[in-house]
Length: 370
Image 1: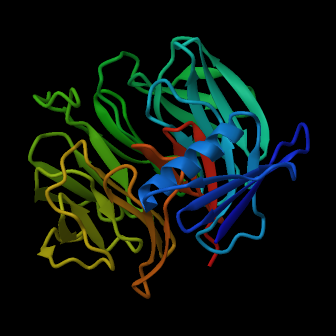
Image 2: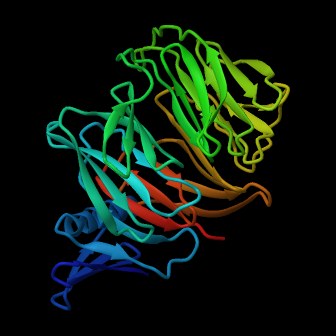
């Protein structure tokens, strides 16, 4: 039997839900117990999620500070995001993080600053008619935001928003971070900047090819490796380029697939279901402890986040369970099946947790301290 207790911080009232096989029981503040019989495991999950969300919309939150590895520490309703991208900005060196959502009919965009236990440190109005697709937290106390394909810099100290890289809305941008490094596209150059040493470590002029795919306008994608030794980018339909920062050498991989990621030690690179030695581009058998799905399209899901040897992996569908793998021991440590994901979620590691922003309008924190 599974039991969760939600608390309303304003009224101090408690609401309890029990899931016992195909039976759901709920109780508000020690009152009458309501019981619901379900016909299947799917219906149990659906009805339980709906019941919990109903209470969270009223201000109830779930807190479990004693959560074990892979268990939920916190659930809170934030509000549905009108743009559907569920932006998050987090760092592996700290547990606080930032979540952005569009309120109403683009009446405002709100930036939430949460602590590692789910408490709201502050909320900041970013203004109307904005649509942040993605955002990264930089070591210099700024957030770089992809606002409708315009990269902007938000200062955590002054709350000022300033243009950062590409000055025109060209629908061509890439944005990623790893450690002290950040990667972006200016509209002409790929730039990798080290905010720790305040040094530009890579700049390359590239032209992003226009796409015929209705899902995106240009081939303009780039990622940094977990140990900050490499990056991979794509500016045309059928190849990826891996750059080694120490040597300056580039390896071209012929692959028209999607969903690239590096191994935690930077040794291997995967895209389109195929795997390669990142230094040479040699194709190899799968070196990862999990099956790398093949044949996934741009619209399918394959999200991989890393922290040290820990890998959080979600493949095929945006509501599939997030698997937590130990890359070194090759063991599956846990599987997170968040109850507040309908079709999609976005997730990132922090220093001790995995944080989720879901399309149901919820924020969840899972303990990921081994």
